Length: 413
Picture 1 (cartoon, rainbow, N blue to C red):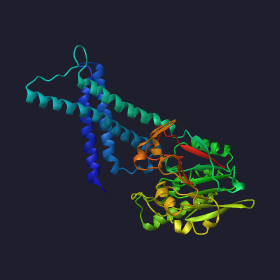
Picture 2 (tube, one colour):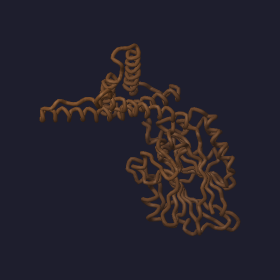
Picture 3 (cartoon, rainbow, N blue to C red):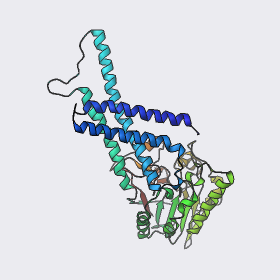
Picture 4 (cartoon, rainbow, N blue to C red):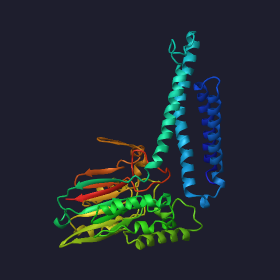
């Protein structure tokens, strides 16, 4: 088994967390009652079930299991682990406080103080309650997010460019990204999102990669759904890091290569024009603009770099306005802005906004911002603009908290 050392480290850490959390649970529960016994039994049933399930993961072939069961089971285990880690941080603060108090008392020969005085609760009980409350809130929030994964949010904005040819002013573009069809479990809900797109009556639809999680076969049940997308100027697409099958152990190199070829055919059969390190010319009347699309190009070392701007760009320089489809937004700072300053508008995806965060008027936060400078929405530098879509689908965590799935509608002026 690959990475067995790391696997058993995580398993051991989960077990230690369970015992650590249990000590805090004992502090806050009433000394003797049926409720105490029921809570303790429930706690250990859930914890042991999670440990056993995690332990068996390397030995079980999940290919024939219901997709929803695997997806939600994995999410619950990860959610429990994250929640317990957060709760444990509060307990650790209390343990450090009590340890420091004990050392000081020994040095100064003064008795330790454990209460707030009067009828107040001890600091240990307070921090235990606080840790359990915060950890429970995090887990509850993640469970709540399960219901948001198909709540497609339509974001509309207008972009102005001085060099946009007159015939293209007023053009409406729908931008979607990161479909991840292998994660879907509700076809009807996915279709509702497609209807929202078609209701916008866009002139052009752009898709910026990650059609699947790993395998082209994931699209079998959804080709008819996404084939409904159409627009007068066409539907154009490119590839994302997941489309190459890099995260699957294939039987052979040829099997992986064949999977990619099958995925290319899926785009074609749906009527999408897949741009593979190339550009096309869009015409309206006598005016023309260039649309470039490259394969995945990432400035991050753990993601593939297949894109070749040196193939896509030549010939496009003659057109007054250029749009680029590039899955990973790190490409914008790393190459587009520095070497191709005449590319006016870049569309990306990839980050999903980490499917977790906060978006309020004037304030946005997500853990993904510590990895990606541009992670959601519109960014500008000089005359160049980048839009990062929050993703149509989901992967890993089957839900969204604060960062909803996105359909972007852009009007050029």
